[in-house]
Image (tube, rainbow, N blue to C red; front, top):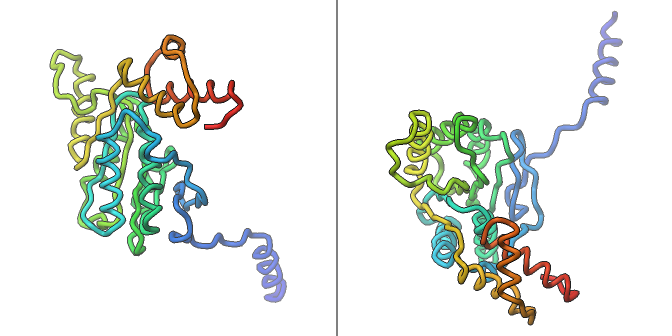
Length: 270
């Protein structure tokens, strides 16, 4: 085969190959999803107003302050949000970032898609040269034997190495394990103690740890009131409690679901 034929074949293959994707514009969106090899921009960050989250006032102050410090270039911690499901951990992350973004474009949220933790160093390398601050978000971190490898990998990444993580890149992790920071129960089985010790070793590497606890009756009804009062919606406390009992817990999520039901009945939107 002559050289001209080879050139034509190479040119044809080049035309068939997909065009390389453009590099991520890390200044162009409020949030991104890291998919392992590249980031997908999220043009609108889905977040409730910070004032719409009730029953977690201290947690709101702590995480909002961290986001503001990170955006300003000041020293900021990595953060662990742990505890009861449905009490607003993930919603608080989005709300705090969105609230800070009303004042400055200097902060973006980057959520790591499931299974992408092994590519974490590549993401850090890509963000290292950017001038914007980034809060990397790992939602619903698993624990137990099946998630031990991921937990140990995250612990190693937080410990760092000879190349330190840039100060404008910090992590926020949510976990539903209520006892992640509790140092007790020495009577547990060996494998349970190992899992607990792994969790504690990971928790110790976060400078900010915020606990989220199940709502009691009064807190649950107060959260519900926060959603319904701005809409002029009244509710029967007994019906609200029955709704929570049917779902097996009293939480901010359950309160929002019941408020959605009430708004739907009234033909309103939340």
